[in-house]
Length: 69
Image (cartoon, helix red, strand yellow):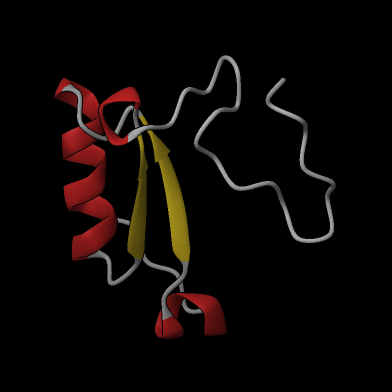
């Protein structure tokens, strides 16, 4: 996969969330993101993140945290 981006973000590198980053396809995505000079943030149940419930994830800046009870 080849993708060229000449924006300032591409030159600096950005953090990219990869859901399922420990799975078969997700691992390949993580490799490509890294090779492109970006920082992959792996979201996976095996790393304590459950995307169906939101447990283990950090809310966006300024967003209130939901109670776990």
